[in-house]
Image 1 (cartoon, helix red, strand yellow):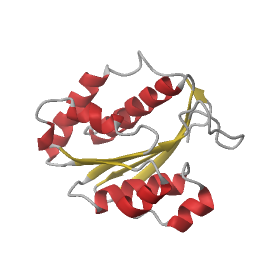
Image 2 (tube, helix red, strand yellow):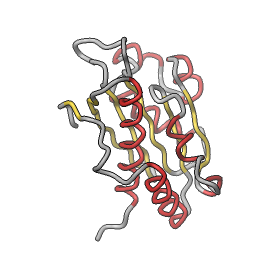
Image 3 (tube, helix red, strand yellow):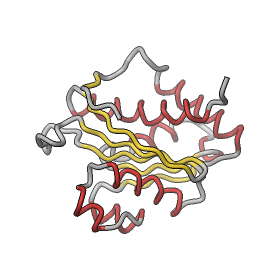
Length: 174
């Protein structure tokens, strides 16, 4: 888990269209489909994926679950988990990723829930805090990041990190 502030990474990863093409190739080669479950990004991850022509061969669906009720109704995130930990938390990110797979035909999912700002932060969860959840072939992992910058920068960094991590995990071991 990374908790130190992370500036938006412009030079660390390929640009977004290249990253999406890499993801498309890896998912296509393995016959897997992707589902997204997004809160703080409001569908930007799904939008980046579907910007690529032919994405219907590997992108199954996207859930924009901005409200707590949507997380519960669309993804099956237990309301008591949200009440106990808050929407921006590891258990909710995990449940969102698992719920995206359970409520779709996908074998891979990425979920994000965070505080993009400019308001809404707290001492425990400052603006820029994002919890990620990924599910791949029944295995789920999570990560917390703290991004710096304005709302647009936090959301852009979230999209990039969500996709880059999935690409890295899908790549065959060298």
